[in-house]
Image 1 (tube, helix red, strand yellow):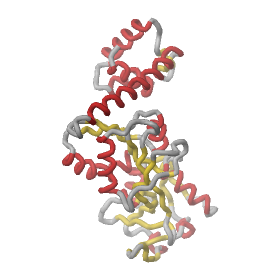
Image 2 (tube, one colour; image 1 turned 90 degrees about the vertical axis):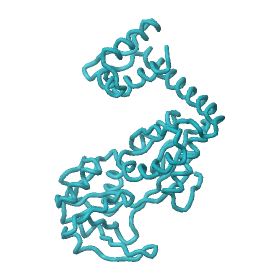
Image 3 (cartoon, one colour; image 1 turned 120 degrees about the vertical axis):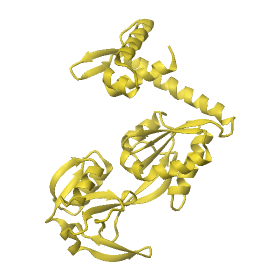
Image 4 (cartoon, one colour; image 1 turned 45 degrees about the horizontal axis):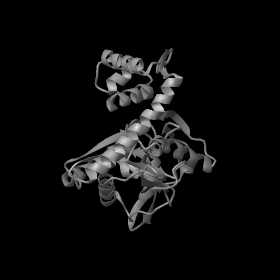
Length: 309
């Protein structure tokens, strides 16, 4: 059995479908099925069974998946140690970030990193902060950009930057009549009290996203019940709806689109903030490539340096 076949097993388990796994692996479904049959024949037992909702691991499959993940983590650590001997002339970093935030924060930082270290490949995994935390704990990522506070990971976390949850509205939305000005860090900021927005429709992200949870928490903290016309849209979709005049939505200050007709309002005079951090898998070897990427992200995105936690 080869390392690539271990990755096949993990991908099938994650996708719960041989066809979806084959698509993700850029291979024919028949080839993946044949590879799985060969592995099962070699091991002497079934690894997956078909159900009405796809495939799921058997007891033997669960054992194999646990060992496969550990073997791949061990292999990556050995690979990193050996590649470090080449002093950043080669290497790979498994980096995790949310899709929405990554779209705005990552491209520029990666471009400058690539100029400095053209031989280092950054493999990106897109997932929400809670999923990234689990992948870090399992050692499947070398570095992740996550939202604090974390629920399980208590070490190997460095503060990167502070972000702000803001309201998105089109330029002539009547909510602007409720907006006021304040000066924050020498900059004039428009803000609105949530209590003054209850007459307007809201478009929210899903409950299981950081943004959706934060928005609902702010309403609940003030004892408010918003008029939600859509409550489970992705952040980009919700923002696009708001900019089309279909309601108010939320976004992060770091993800504001510099679009004509877009207005962004702080929530209250003090604003609502969250901390973003860089996290590493606890107890794992940190490669020079991962450390170089972290330094570049701090240089490009960081404000105020890093602090341990």
